[in-house]
Structure formats: structure tokens, C-alpha cells
Amino acid sequence: MPDAYLFALILTFLAYGLALLLTGKGPLELIEMWGAGMWCILAFAMQMTLILITGHALASSKPVTRVLKALASLPKSPVQGIMLVVFVAAIASWVQWGFGLVVGALLAREVAKTVKGVDYGMLVAAAYSGFVVWHAGLSGSIPLAIATSPSIVERLVGIVPVAETIFAPWNLLLAWFIIFTMPILFYFMAKDKKDVKTVDPRLLDEKIEELTVVEEVTFATKLENNVVLNMLFGLMGVVYLVNFFMKGGSLTLNIVIFIFLIAGVILHQRPISYVKAINAAIKGAGGIALQFPLYGGIQGIMVASGLAAIIANWFISFSTAETFPLFTFWAGGLINIFVPSGGGQWIVQGPINIPAGVALGVPASQVAMSIAWGDAWTNMIQPFWALPLLAIAKLGIKDIMGYCTMVLLYTGAVISLAMLLL
Image 1 (cartoon, rainbow, N blue to C red):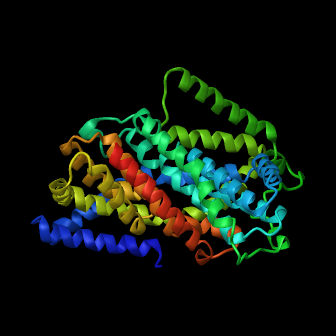
Image 2 (cartoon, helix red, strand yellow; image 1 turned 90 degrees about the vertical axis):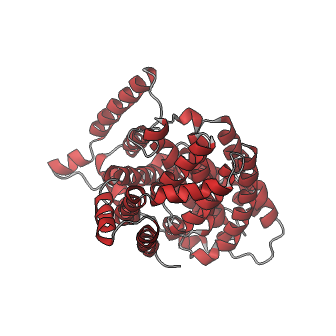
Image 3 (tube, one colour; image 1 turned 60 degrees about the vertical axis):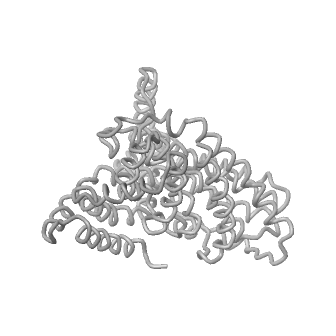
């Protein structure tokens, strides 16, 4: 499959061509809209980058690593090991998606070291499958974006609090139903598996990133390894968060980033350890930095030209209030194959589906979460976010795709039914 950057280019040309054909705008006028839109979402791009790297850095801390080693000692059979990995990875992904990807990969490696006869490909697939619930969780970029000012939907319906999205009863029930039933799905896939492909545990002993501190021989290195500095900074963050929530503050994108930043600083203890963890994590953020300006340009064309309104009216023409969440979910799943970033997808799809949903009387919170679930759903067959995990696991996409396709089919059926019942 081509790199996601190529899909962003193709979508740019597609949006430009459709706007030229359907909106009556001139070629140069559309170029101006594209160029102006490209720089409108830089703050959002930075937020998405920080979500990824703060979660990754937290997962690589020594306390988290020790917990994962302890968890890996619990399973007594290959099937139990696989069920444990998908369950823990799903919970971690619900808490924070960058954290979940890394925790899942590290736990899979530890289980492969301690449980004899476990199929390593299925184990890593289980780790990635937990990612399917991320957008319904605490770091979901769409629900957090519409709870943060300014947002795409603010001018239509105002700020949408997380109580109506992440913490909506239907969303919590759906997310946790999937979290608790995916281990059962993997149980049936694993229990009678004949062609088991194991891995030599010695191949997994290599550390992902050396985060040990250097010997304290100079004033500079003493400062870099000074625990007190990190703890004071972490304490300031904790005081701020306690005060924020005591005054009635709620989760926003910035607050979630802040929580994981402070948690990472505290758990890494030494400043230089956290610096190295962030440096290791930032390698996975190149796609966000490169592609988000392109998605901003696409949004500029679609919104300013009126193309988004034309497509929204087309959706309205064959939808009802009852079927719109389902169609939005399916459309979200399709678009995610080409726009694999939840934030990028929201920039493209939000201006289309939110006005259409409002016109049909569907709450903006339901429309937004339908897009969010669609985005997370087809990640199971979109390798973009699997790449960091596969690099840690030392596998290729072909080693996990079959198992992830089964997860796609199962969760697609469950989520589709939920969308019809909204």
C-alpha cells in the first residue's frame, strides 16, 4: 500500500477537481482557498503530535515497563497470553492511543519471552487490535476537538462537552463491550490453531531505546540527571490539575496532553531520561507534521468553495435521522483508509457530516462519534498506525493482517448495530 502522504496528495487533487466541476469557482480562486487553508490547523497538528509522543514516552518509562513484565508472568498458556495482550492493549488505548500502541507492543514482546508456544504474529495482532477503541476513549481527537474552542462545529452548535461524547452512556457501553469481548474473539481464533509461528525469545532481548542515564561527571550532566528538578516540575503540574478539576474543569485536548506530559516527567524521574524518551517518540510523528497542512488545504477548498455543503446535501437526500449515524460510520471507515489520522479525517469529514446531521436533527455529538468510530474501525486494515508497533515487534504488516481483518468484521458488525439503535 502506498504511503499515506500519497493519499493526501490524491485527495487534494480530487477536492480541487470536484470543486472546479461543482461549485462554479475558478481555478486560481480555488488555489487561493487551498493555500489559505493549509495553515489554519497548525495548532491542531501540534496537539496531535503531542498526543502521540507523550503517550509513547510514558509507556517507555521504567515503572510502566515493570508493570508490563509483571503482567506478562500471569498467563499460563498461549491462549491466555493472547487474551491478556488484547485486553490490556484495548484498555491502554482507551486511556491514550499513543500509550496503548506502545504498551501493546511491549507487552506482546514480554509475553512472547515468558509463554512457550505462543503464536507471535497473533500476539502482535492482538496488541494492535486493542487500538480499535481508541477514538471512543479519553484521547479521542474528535470528541476532544469539539470540546475545545475553536472547533469546526462551534459555529453550528457551540462547544460539545465530553459528557455527550466520550462519557455518553451509549459510547461507554459500546467501547467496553468491545474491550471485554475481543479476548473471547481471540480465544476462538487461537484455541485450535495448528500452524503456530513462534519466535526465539533471545531475538526480543534488544531494548527499543536506550534510556539509561550517563555517568554524572560534569555540572551539566548532574543537572540532566537531577531528580529534584523533574519532581518539582511534576508537582507544579499535579497542583495545576487538581485545582483545574476542583474548579469544574473538564477534559479537553490540551488537558489530556498535559496529564500525559506531567505523568511522563514524574515516572521518568530524571530530566535526561524524559528527553531521550521524547526523542525516540518523535520519530513516529513525521506523518502528522507532513500531512496535516495538506488536510488543512483540503478543508480550505471544501469549506470555502461550498463543496462541503454540496456533499452534505447529497448525504441528506438519502438519509434519515435513524440511518444517518450508520452511513456516517461507514463513510468514516472508508475515508480512514485514505486519511489515516483521526484529526486529519475530522478536518475533511467534519464540515460535511456535521451540517448534514444538524439538518436531519441528529445531535452533533452522535455525528462526531460516528465519524470517530469509523476512523478507529478501519485502522485494523490501515497499516499507518501499526508501523510503530510492528517496528517494536520486528514483524511486517502481512504477519498480522489476517487476524486484524477478523477483528474488523466483528467490530464492524457490533458498531453498525449500535449506530442503528442510537
